[in-house]
Amino acid sequence: MAEQLNLPQTNDRKARYTALLPQIEALVAAETDPIANMANTAAALREAFGFFWVGFYRVIGDRLVLGPFQGSLACTRIGHGKGVCGTAWAQRKSQLVPDVDAFPGHIACSSASRSEIVIPIFAPSGEVLGVLDIDSDRLDDFSEEDLTQLETLMERIGAKLF
Ligand code: SME
Image (cartoon, rainbow, N blue to C red; front, side, top):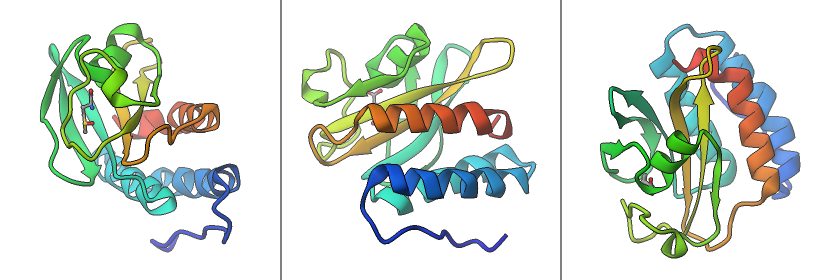
C-alpha cells in the first residue's frame, strides 16, 4: 500500500480512528520487521492527531527501554512501577492521565507535556512486552474513546510490533 494516510476532513477523533485503524493494520500486516512497524505506527498516530509525542517503550530485563517514537528527545529507561509508563507495566493496565502534574511520580521528559495515555502491549502468554505512550501538550486531551480505540489497535497489531 502507498505510504500515505487517507484521513477524513473532520477533526472528530472517533471518525479519524475509524479511518486510521484499518490503515495501520494494513501497513503492519505488509511488514515483518517489528521496529519498522513500531516506527510507522507512531508516525501514523502522530500524523492523524497531531499529538506532541507518540512512541513505544519495550520491556528489556527490569526496565522499559525507549523504542521508535515521533517527537522530541525522551528518557531512555524507566523502572518497573515508575512514572506513567512503568505504572502501566506494573499494573498491567492502561493509564489515562488528564493532568500529568497530578500524577504522583510522573516522569517529565518534556515540560510541554500536559496529559498522557499509556497502553500496555501483551504477549499471547500474558506477559507485558512494552507500552504505547502518547503525550499531549493540552490538558485533559484524552478520553475513554482514545483508550478504547488505542487498546483495540494494540490488541490487533501487538504481535507485529515485538
Ligand atoms: N511521562 C512518561 C515518561 C515517558 S515520556 O512521556 C516520553 C512517564 O511518566 O512514564
